[in-house]
Length: 196
Length: 196
DNA sequence: GTTCCAATTGGAA
DNA sequence: GTTCCAATTGGAA
Image (cartoon, rainbow over all chains, first blue to last red; front, side):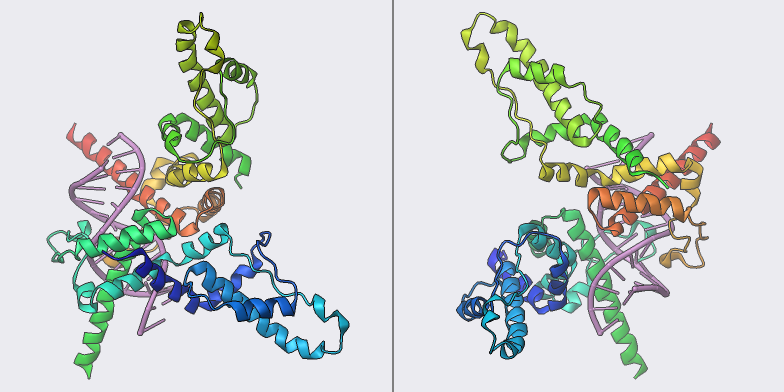
């Protein structure tokens, strides 16, 4: 059984790595939950972030804060002689549930793929199907593939559905597509080797 | 161009007609936004509902209220002699956004089917595909079907995606499945006629 | 190189 | 009778 903490860690690391997905959040039209107004304030919060928290909220918050501080460091020199240094605005940081939900919804398919790659070998993914059943469109034509270990798959399915608050049918769809892609990747690799 | 009001009307009527989908909402673990505590209170609200509002929220609220009043009328006689008549509890009614969202999310596929049936004939649905492209799995094997009028389809797609706050890819999927089902329904009908 | 997608099918729910 | 689903494919993004 995969622990929730383990899942969270994998997914948080992924989300943090994909910075561009966070950058679009600035445009979301929501009142900020927490606003840092000055360079001094943001620098303090930035320096103070020694937490080991790896949650999406924290990672995202820290990413935004870091970005804001970097931006302000550039302008801080220019304003060194100014007494109004105290009022330099930085972007607001809004780790609200609704926004978090939007981030998550965009990326559950990637989470599925990362977890599949974590729990199965490429060979397993390329040679198994989710149900072990024949394609209804190719009965008697295409050989059935054995079923992926339902325990590990079920674990991924439930955790992703819960974490992203989506129906398991969506997770199943993502798994099916990921397995089809794994098969194609292997096929292409073999074809390339045969050519060489 | 289909008006938003027209869409709302179709979908609201549908949701109200499917009473069983509302009945499950009682079990949602959310604090009530509005609670009616006594028979007199609920009867007054029930009688007072002469609104022409056809929104999902109102229709649902009225449905729940009506149900609660009906239930209470049965027990009211038993309690006629009781001075504690004033404290008969009835189910709470909670038309909150989050719950409404859950109702909606469960049913967007049905909305798609109703709107398709409203804007296209059964024959069109049975003989056209969404893209007009061949199935990648049956290239050169199955003849391509002509594309469903993209203007009407696009209208449905955008309105459903907006109303249910879901990605258009989900709406597309629902359309594809609905068209496949329409084709099968026609096919079965013809087979039955040939048998007769 | 990776991810997503629609058309098709028979059967499950 | 209606609705939903997964396996397969080639190609688009």
